[in-house]
Every structure is written in structure tokens, then in C-alpha cells.
Image 1 (cartoon, rainbow, N blue to C red):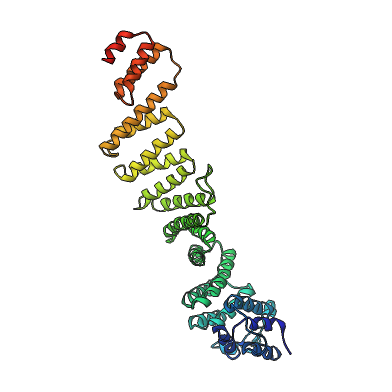
Image 2 (image 1 turned 45 degrees about the vertical axis):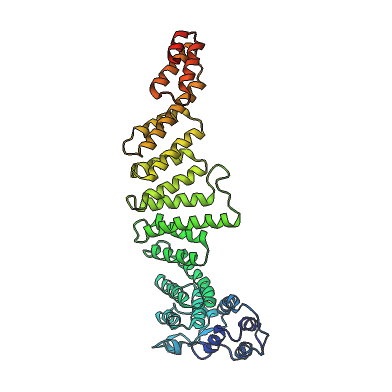
Length: 420
């Protein structure tokens, strides 16, 4: 007599895999199955029922979860509890998951049995029991947290093949906990742990979301700062991966794309968590530069100004000032460029002599651009050129242009004097 679901389950487990040994152990250590099903399962495990199939670790979790869901695997309470309840107490020794609605609440002993199995390296047993309890859906906050953290810790110790399966199963535990207890005092701890697990399994977008949950919804948590920093790192990693695989669409079109928006949001959270921290200036610059590359120059300038205010003597502040000036030049806002360059030139804390000379020159060229674009009479233009020459000196051919303006206004004597 064979059971198709269990045949499928065991046929997908390679006979020499660790899970095959664990499944054999289940028959005597912690679980019991129907005798008729036991024969089919045993045949499959030792290779007589079906041919061996590849990738046991990838399919094993699916089979195990299906077995737990269908209720074919049952607790052996006599082996798993130090003081098992008697049948008189109303709980049969082998109550199935299918009858979970009729069972009493999950006991501390049942949860600790899973934790013990995982802690002792009995991963097959622990995984099966974990999924069985998770499927019941009547766990308390503490029980579900205990199970999930136990599975997560065990996954860290498992060999690479088992680890993949166990981490994926742990995801289900975190998702169930977060969905059921979002307002728990332990929400920051669980979101942080879940984010690290998701990052480890390369589910970066999801990891980012949970890092940000801690940083923004639990700003007073002990994890808030590290989660904000981790969100920055994760967002940068997402961008690097997209650049590597050719799917990156940033800096090509105006406005922030999704990944850039994530990065800027993470930077804001990190700066908010430690506004006076050692990385605040560099983070502000990173956010400003992201906006600058995306054409969001107004927002970028505001952030670059914050970088300058934090440490005007730093090379980062000088670079921020140069990019502010460049943003005005890009938009051909010559008046704003002149005013800004003069302000930077006059700031004694900002930059060295070479920087001051550069800003003064930029201001002069911006003034020339404004004068060239202005609609003035010939006399007005000649007077403006004389004023520019007096303020900025002979930059970029200013003297020759002033002479030309004077001659155009019929002021030959002034032109001759200046030309000499």
C-alpha cells in the first residue's frame, strides 16, 4: 500500500543526503506515521520505491512542508516532553496537524522540542516540526519568535546545502511573526534579524524594506542607526548589481529612479540617526551627488550646502561648492552663479587660495554672460562694461570688450585711453 504524497516527498530526497538519515530517524525520534504510509516512506528513503532525483535540498523543504500541511506527520509527545500530558487530560499522544483545530494551544514543551532538535543539529527533525507548528497558526508571540530565531540560528550552522533550505523556511517564520505582531516591543529586533537574513539570501529589495522599517518606525531602537547604515549599503549594492547586469537606468533620465530614491531615503535616515556622527558629512554628500546626477539640482544644492556647513575646511566641502556652481552654470542661471561664486570666494573657511581664485574667476565670467545677454543701450552697455572691468579686472578679454563697447557708444577718447 503506497501513499502518493509521501512517495513524492521521499523520492525527492537523495538516499545519501543528510535529510534521508534524518527522515529515517524521525520514525523513532519524535514523529509517528500511519503504518501503511510508513512502508511506502521507508521504501522510498532506501531507494527501492523510486529512482533518485537531483537537488534534494531544494525539493526537500517543499515535501516536508506538504507533509506537515497534510497532517501525515504527527507529534510523538512521549518522546518530546519531559512530563507528557496523559490521555485523560484530553490530548492524545499522536494528535495530527489535520486535527489542529481540536487541539489545545501549542505547549512550551512542543516549542522547546523544536528548539532542542535544531540546537542539537537534528535539522531534518527540527525543520519538519518547525513547519508543522507554523502551519497551525495558533502560536503566541513568544512561541513564534522562539521558533523563528531558533531556526535562524540553526541555519547559520548548517552545511551549505541545508542552509539554503533552512533559511528559506525561516523566512516564513519571520513573515508570520511580523504580520501577526507588528506593534510588539520586539518588532525592531525581529525586523532587524529578518533584514539580515534576507540580505544573506540576496533578497536585497526586501532586506532594504526591513532595515528601513527599523530605522524609520523604531528610531529609538538600539538597532536604528546600524539599520539605517545597512539600508544605505543595501541600496548601493542594488545599484551596483544593476550597473553590472546592464539593467541600470539611472543618470540617463531626469528624476530619481526607484533605486536612487531608496538610497536617498536611507541616507536621510542614517543622518537623522546620527546628525553629528563621523559619517554625516560624507552621507550628505552622497545623497546630494545622487540628486545632482539625476538632474535634481535644486535639492542637490540644498544638501551640498549642508555638507559645507558641517565642515567648510574639508576637501568634500570644496567639491560640494564646485558642484553647486556647476549646477547653476548647467541651467545658465548666471545671476545666481555670480552671487554664489562670490559668496564662496569671500568665505575664509572654505578652500585654499587656488579655490578662491577659481571662484572669483567664475563670478567674473558669470557677470560677463549676464552683460552679453542684457538688452541695454550703447551708453548703458559701455558703463556696465566699465563697472565689470573695475570689479573683476581683465578676465577673459574683459578689457577688449569694454573698449569695443565704448567705441560703439561713440566714446572714442575713453576707448583710446583704456586701450592704451
